[in-house]
Image (tube, rainbow, N blue to C red; front, side, top):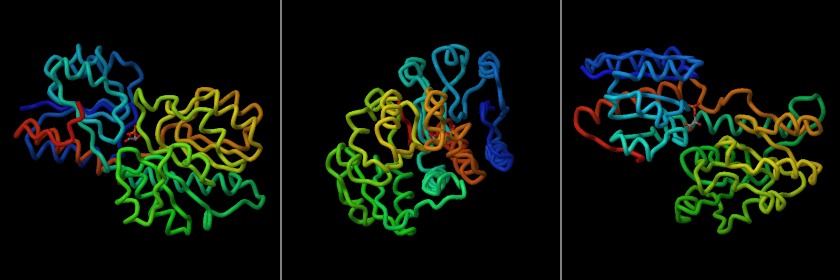
Length: 306
Ligand code: 3PG
């Protein structure tokens, strides 16, 4: 009977956990949950005899892999897998998968929510501005960005996108205007929303060269990863552009410094909230369980990322 560990420092909603259990019970798999753990040693202990692992933003590195002698597959219930050491996993003969698209709607809704919250001055009682009629530029045009585009168009925004890995067809079909240069992203929009993964190419890539191009009143939205921002450049943007605002799902490391002078122009969720909905947890959790079963039973490697 294969053993699955669901290790989530940030637990799934109870409904999602129940559905994951049901999937695994139907397949006659053994399972255990390690939730809200504080010490990584608890994870090391819990993975000791498992064949499969379901995680969220939990880190899977060489130490975890060394502790998991029977491990065959890790599924990141979500989109970004920057928390998994892919090289080490491959070296340990462990397959890594994600569940693309399963939590996208939740992140897209948060993106729109953050835009409205900041455009309305964080609900401070003064007149803010509306989204309708404004330009929104999406950096990256994957699952989340496409949903954000649709929602923003429903509100009446003019939507642009840049994605170096896609041709223009899908954007044009969705009435999104394609941009051809990275620089255009930052000089075009009233709102710029980041939908890029964190990897060696993108870390700190949102630098001063790009941020300096933003219009003075721009709102930068980051529901991707804090690592893609060059935080010194972010501070510089606050200092140099009197109307610049930043909304982010997870704070930059220099939040305290930014808050000293520009607290009214920044808002960050205290914990990563993008995928924190019951629906997203259910979709991603069920997909993760099913992918594990399909891999262990039939060798199905769809969604393998290493
Ligand atoms: C993702 O990459 O899927 C999101 O950032 C959600 O991450 P979480 O599962 O840690 O909330």
